Image (cartoon, rainbow, N blue to C red):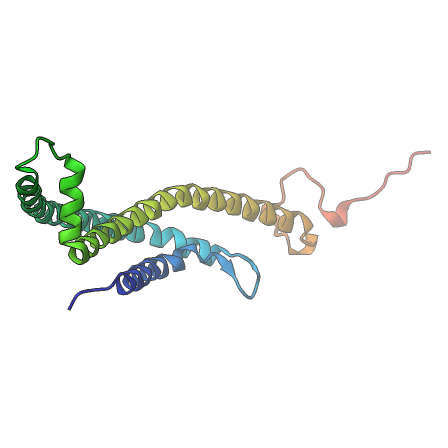
Length: 196
């Protein structure tokens, strides 16, 4: 059963959706409850990065091979149809002194095989579209790497700052003696000296 252009487009859209869904968990950084990027979400994305990028590169290579195979199959079929059309056109022009152009051969070959030509060409185009989509996804993943790195660095800096703020704002009673520098007066030892 021959595929229609519509069914090929539906399969392409389903393929794109599948790829996006497989990669989306890594891109989902905002916690819905906190409405913020959390360390857990960021760590999950960082942990998934290698596996998803490896899988995406492998899928790109697989699709690239499939595309090259479709192209070769189409070329082999097209060469045969072109030769048949060329022979037919040359027979028609045999008694005239006019020499037919290559465009006439190609047009005749397409007309003689109209349905099959456009269907096979659509398969090649769809395979190329899949390959190019995966290439764009790998490019997106490369730029996402720098985004994750920046977010991670910013988050570490925020955590250090929050930790320092928490220690500075902590009550003096909660500070243990060994954490207070020697030579500095303890909070209960602070007295104002009044000089006369």
